[in-house]
Length: 230
Image (cartoon, rainbow, N blue to C red; front, side, top):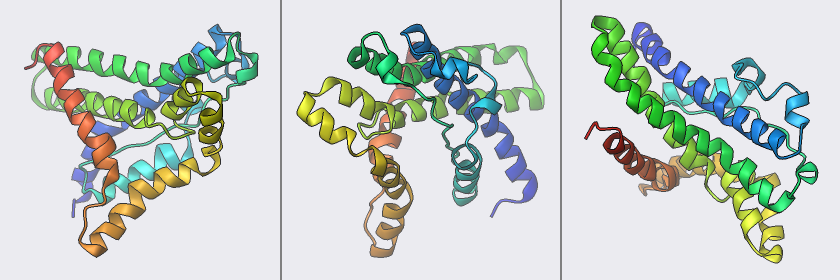
């Protein structure tokens, strides 16, 4: 079990990456929708980089804290309040829904690349600041890629679900869209319940790692290769 000081330090190198990741993610949705004809998020003040406008009590605070504690500081992950989008107000609803949905994960990929590039600048720092900044930047790469991959799972209300709804033929699109009400329960069950059941049965049921964790590891290698670290 981690002591308080170690836990506080671990939290300090995860909180900023998580806040930046979820804030830019949601702001990107709102900005893209605004530029494509729907000003709902803009009028509600959600096209902003102020994290207080995007914080969800469970997804941004409680769930990351639970994961941080349960993993002894190895993992923190969260999500923000979804940005409201009136798809009927978009100029080309079917196409623009895809663009609005993809904007969030795209922003996370961009932040991951920028964070990886900024790691080169750590040579100008030293001591504790060097270590703290290094952990923040490395965690920023990881959490942004994790958020991008996770959100592109084809399950509504995740971004990947909305992209799939926009791309599939009408009959399949309608069926997938109907999953939205149960989508978050399916997701939380996959993250928390299945691994717990698997541990009791002695079977690896960590679908979150297979579908999100493993692809994220490969993406991290690619990002560090592109930015000259490998």
